[in-house]
Length: 251
Image (cartoon, helix red, strand yellow):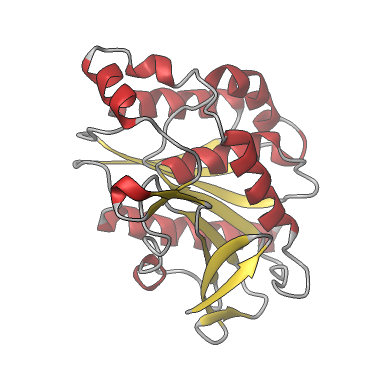
């Protein structure tokens, strides 16, 4: 694994031709969740049965969360307010709010994607870019996918691991992009635990239906468990990557 700075973000690179992310193989960018250390998802690259030469990029969120032992965040969350909302049945309403800091996080992620094909990070050859993340990282990935120019940021697939709605009022009119142009039929892998205490399962089901209604090709992986990434999801990611690359080769 190699660490580097790319578009202002600390990024951990793995896989590829040398185990450090070299080459022009398929590219999977995975964003960690709120409060996790920057290297939280790095071990996944050895647990996913990805196609040969697949490169893994694990960006570290720019914000520090001191109260969580140095964890990182893409934007700040008032956990007291969030827990109260869940306990009082108002959790769904939080999904309509636009978090302060979301736009800045989206800009940083867009900068990272724009760096693909530059001197530091080779563009994938005949395979495309897979983008996704866990929890807050999943929400940021979808937020960018809905807003970015699809011709400039071609995605072979989107991975939403235990994510949910955020900025929903802004997302709803943007979802139509998944049914037209370069984003038409975007392949999405979505996983969620039926007993998730952080982001309730019904909200994930609702997001799934909204994505399908908009025209996305959603692979749905529910699992019995909480807020995490169990083995069956890792298996699903491997299959999702392989099929996505096969489709691009066929097309």
